[in-house]
Length: 224
Image (cartoon, rainbow, N blue to C red):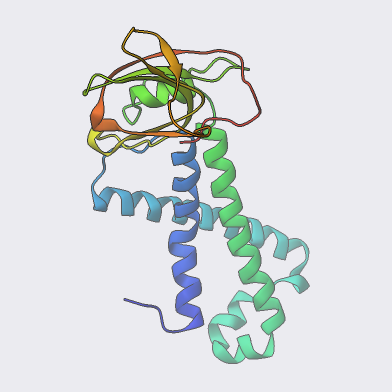
């Protein structure tokens, strides 16, 4: 169902907005696990309810201290649309404040909860996440030697990787220094004209890889 009025749009924002922000921040620090659509929707709705309620409590405190800067909820309920028309500035301030505070609280809560790396067992985690992000020593970056099913082997720094739990949906991107193993068993620069900047490797084609952590060559971190 598509919301057709401004009120419906705002209602939808408060129902899902804070929860969606919470999930986005969480997935930035922790890879998502396989969850049913119902469980994912319930998580978003519950998070939105919690943070919207917290925002309402904060605004209630503000109104108790400065009643003139917030709309009167009793008159709003009694007069409905007429009250909104006559006090649109107060209503606008309230709506903007409610959305900003609830979304801000959800983002901060998720950041505080999930930003730490991990010695803790996480059922949503993957070996890729642990090796390429959570357990990377400070000041270093993951460099991998990748062996593919076709026998080719590549060496490079991890530029990006996908966090899908299913191996068939994962992808790995390497950045310079990039090397390929030649027939003599030595790693040499990639052949061909120019300088290649990335190697894209589908997860299903990877047989195995080895990881080490040399000092960072620049400030660009691993994404994913």
